[in-house]
Structure formats: C-alpha cells, structure tokens
Length: 150
Image (cartoon, rainbow, N blue to C red; front, side, top):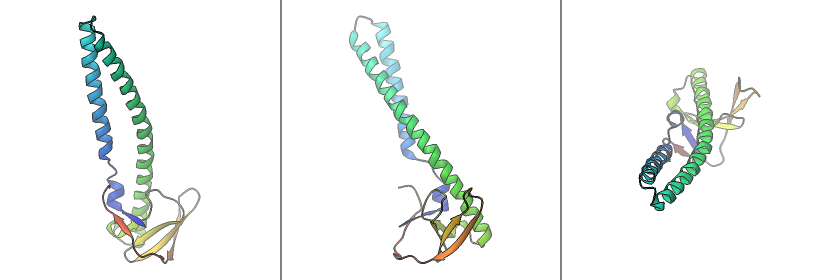
C-alpha cells in the first residue's frame, strides 16, 4: 500500500507536461519553417507535403494535450483538496503535516491516514465539510511512502 506525503501533494508539477509543451513548440517551429519554404518556392511540392504532415501532427498533439490538460487540472484540484484536508487534520490533532501520510491523492470516504505511528480511517460527510477519524489496524504493515513524483 502506498502512502503520500504532504509535500508530494503540494508539489504536483509534472516533468512530462513540460516535455509535451516543448515538443509542441518544436513542431510549431518546423511547421512555420516548412510553410515559409513552401510559400517562397511554390514549385517544390515537398515543402507543401511536409507542411501538411506537420500541421496534422500539430493538431494531433494539441488534441492529446487538451485531454491531458483536463485530466491534470482534475488531479491538481484533488491534490489541493487533499492538502487542505491534511492541514485541517494537522491543526485538529496537533501533529505536523510532515508526520501525516494518506493512502490516496483525492479526498474521499474510507481513505486511510497515518498519524505518526497510528492508522485511521477517515469518514467524511457527503459534502466533504466534516470528517471523523476511526483508528484501524493494517493487515499488511509493509507500506511504501511516496515523497516525490515517480
């Protein structure tokens, strides 16, 4: 079972997003270059074909990035909710946020929280405005602590 730290939830930046944005910019630059060459030398159709290929590739990558962007925004929102929840538990239980671990990155019923050396199950009301912690025992004591992005 994996448990996430407060720092992991707060640093929800993802290197792959930067790589995808960089790839889009490179393809856009190639598309601009090839289109410029085609407009200058209209007799050479290879530049026209290359510009069509790069344009289709750019449209494909932008479509993928839009889907990923929507998912990333959802994950970021859930992580922010979890960070607020951890801060609330920290204040109520008088435990520093560095000593609190959670087994999920989104707030929900039946999540398990590790406070120092004890484990608790969080029961939340339907609108996520109140919670109750109930001590539980884990069957498998082998836990993985995720401190940074994998």
